[in-house]
Image (tube, rainbow over all chains, first blue to last red; front, side, top):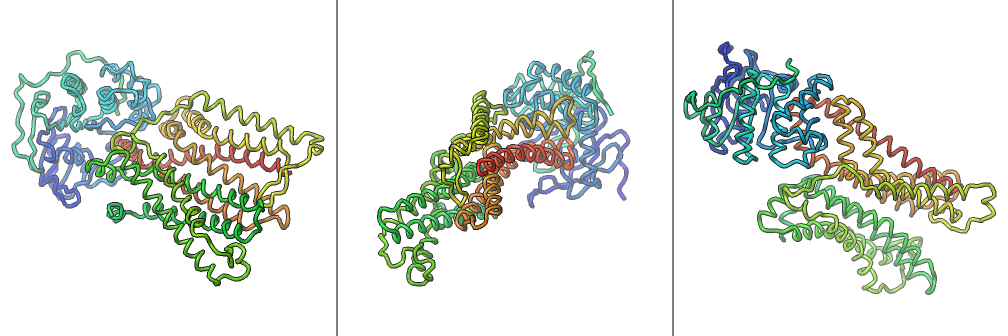
Length: 251
Length: 383
């Protein structure tokens, strides 16, 4: 039996190995993520960032090793257990928005809350407020095919944040955005994480975006190449002061 | 040669589609050759050969319809192949030609096989009962079967070429699918249904028997009045065209009020897919309604059943059902990303399955209404 993870780590991985059809993607990654911290996982394309996030967020089962969330094992969970964990505890933003095309923007944002059993009114109020915060409140009743790519990505960020999950995973969320929009989205993402004490795991191939994180780890060819490097306090973006009170359904 | 190399990468659904196209083409070719054999055996100046040739049109149209729906689905079903071809420099025109060529090749194979069987049977192998159908004892002009059999691959190939949209032939170039119907798409079929119902009422009014029944129906269906036939035709066309909008409305009805995630996903999904599912489902419903009405008439009227229309009906039903299956597979492939995104959100597969089941129930109810009305109009005309 393995040792229990440290108490202050909300996510903890030890020696995780994952292959895609025989091609190794992760070769023994050990990592701890503290509660409320913004952790950046950097590395070039193909280094295994997306696979690491997929394993940590219970989307992919690991081949070897352990993943723990809040001192509970994730690697031994059944498929249904992993679905429940993703729905109730995790939020995810990908490099593509992956919105449901037939639903409007606000329905897309409200969907995770509805799936978790929230009432219609609470779900749509939270959706409207998050859309407003991400400057896409005016397109809430539009379908995704009517929106430009940056608006779609903001809706996707709102969808991940609206249920206020304890951990949000963001896999290259600024990939489809221009620099200005990317900075704004990341600022909102990190400030929301800090103001609501959410843990944010951010994968990016852009070393400049590390300034938004509290800590950064580098990944090359499926291995961590450097120990957890603290980001200088002065360069990290601080939590937004007096963030608007968002009505969210927190379980 | 290039095409054959591509064909090496075929999976079971591709082979199934290919074989079904070839089989359907073989049956249509058999109908065409039978009409040729009969024309050679009959006296010159008889009007029957033309009628027999016209009877080959419904199965030919069914094959072309299936070919068109299947060709349209190729870019969605095999995006990696289209991406590879595009990366290798093939433009949308060449991709369209390749898909149409594949359909034409399958049809040619089916037609050639039928021709070979026809020629072998003509060589004094078939019994005397088949002799008039094969034109035995009469010299066969070489151009006649070749011209007739070229019809099948040509029609199916052209239908396939027209069906592949240029934007969809390019990876990533899929057009957004609208969820609404233009006003004329609702007004026109509604008008047709109203006209059809009015004509049927005229045909069924007391004293309508005095108008007579001058129209002779095929497949042993007896006679009917002009108003009844016109009423059925207008009503059936209107109901078929109205299927898409009705499905979209059924979807809106499902997601009415404050929907649960199940109703929301089922209803909005149905509304979004209605423009794509409407046409193949309408054609299948029309075919099923027509066949059921015919079978019911045959059962109620002794000695009216006919073998050849029955075979034709089977072919038409097979092609229309296969077209629906292909379109469903296309929609499913297109929505793979959405399903993955929903699963990533933690949506349980049971909820997704429930949404599909609810959508199927709504579609079934809608089709039962349109199909039932089509069959009722046809049955009223046969009374």
